[in-house]
Picture 1 (spheres, one colour):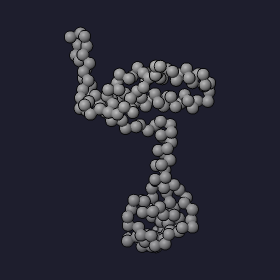
Picture 2 (cartoon, helix red, strand yellow):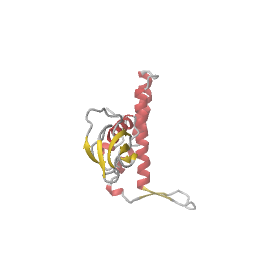
Picture 3 (spheres, helix red, strand yellow):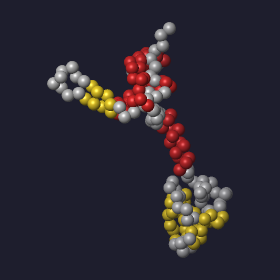
Picture 4 (cartoon, one colour):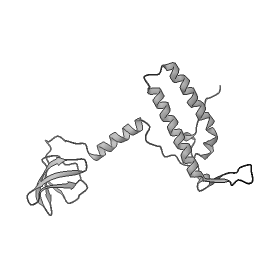
Length: 177
């Protein structure tokens, strides 16, 4: 159903005709002839629009508009985690860390768990990179110097590229000429 504006006339099978008085985030406040003031969720399919009020400005954002804005902001600040697929051959596998001392027990870790931690590390390095680049208190020279450490960190993590399904997700260190 299209977003209803204040002043829109509606019909409800139980409450009869009514007029939308408020358009909240998830519900409409409607004054009905037979029910008085009632709040009805926007997901309710019992409402029928009798006369849309096209002149009234919207007094709130729709849920879709809020989701769009939130996605933009979260993506801008690196808070959305990209879905990165694990290489097919590793799915369901385990990593075995075997101590040199035979008296100690080995540690078994599901590869998916380890992979998830590697991806989180990569995402956090990217956010750190964005924060450095957008910093107003660092000089360009300081930004470049700090950026070199991040690039070297990526280089140290290239060993784990074998876990990724797609090359576009690989860690890339400093390029040698």
